[in-house]
Length: 557
Image 1 (cartoon, one colour):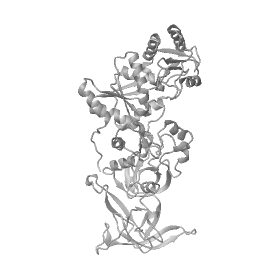
Image 2 (image 1 turned 135 degrees about the vertical axis):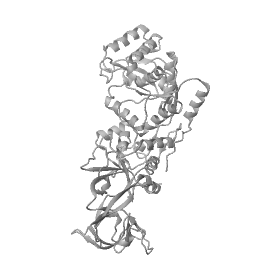
Image 3 (image 1 turned 30 degrees about the vertical axis):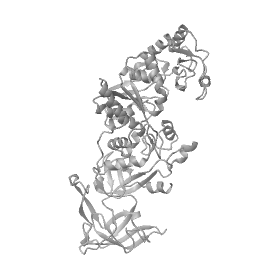
Image 4 (image 1 turned 90 degrees about the vertical axis):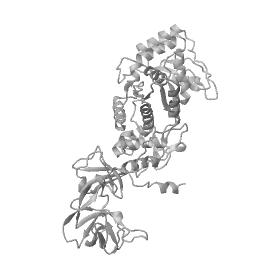
């Protein structure tokens, strides 16, 4: 299955196409994250959109860090975001920071004051909320709204000089406290924060708000199309108001699209941070997390994420996407290009009593449909391991694997028949005694007899012990936190299973970090890029071969 490389045809691309037909300009987009956390799969949708539409139209895409809140931002996040974009294969034309424009933004604020479109307000946060009104009731003017231009200039200059405490004063735009759009009711555009900034140090103690900064940064950079998620639709009139009021010659066009919402996970930075801080996951790069760093560690590929973003498309309506769509994208990407190997996750020892030699070499292809990937030699021996789940002492009717007196095919090897079962003092099965048919080498019988079951195996002497981490969905409910419940109560207690003594074939001895394989009959796995080493291999399950949740979801409907 090959991933489609066709260019999507969505409403945003249609708007841009029409604009390019009627106007002469070079398309410029931007991806503008706030460096206050790690990017997740939801951000990937915006990343792919902004970078891809620029590339499709011979335009530019900038990376801009909207770094206006030093209390939450850190250079650690700046570097992680750069790494995520590089991993996805994107290169920005220009690297920008909103803090690059602090002086210019301050001058714009002074200009608003001078034309009597901004004022310094002494209401505290709670009072501002009370004065703002509700969706059904208009707000009322601040008692400080009619300060003179001279008073406002003096106070704002002193705010910048550090004469006032945090929260003592704010600068607000003077628009309309009775506006139907609550965002236009004299929004705050500057607040006091006596905190050092990661880029500007202690130069500033007043910092601009997002709504003020974002539109002006877009204009300063010459962005032509400001593509953002749907929650900013109600902010667009404010975006336009700042640019129109200040008579900025460059006026980017803001277009909104629905953000990505995946079931069986959460996309809120606050909630993800809560999982990390409460040690409910093992950090931001935990392979169960929807963060790009976590998905990268688990074994997801950039191609699969881009394919997923193309598949779900762009709409104006918020919908929840089935996580199975994402899982199918990684299956589709890995299937044609991933080597097949054998690994026994829960080993059961098998002694082949009539096998006449210690061991022999068998040839096995790396991919059944791609001879160019070559083959490897696997060692078959008198003692092997099979999966515990591939044997039942009392099998049900449709169990076609190994059982007492039953014959089964070993992948690439021989037919074997179980003759007896060895148990320990607790009546647990610890070993099987089997016989093999030497005439069935390669997996077929000269007499034409058929067996319905084929199982994988590894040689006891030649196998490598590895730790296998089986990851599943982080939550066991499609919409964690629905109906006001605590989202953490929906955590899946079985989201990770660690198997410390699994056995993998010898060809994996030199497997490198981030290398991916299909473990036959098990799923796709990746060498962990943090804990794995030459002394101890650690594999993360990326995804099962089939959607094991499909039946569960169907039964819950």
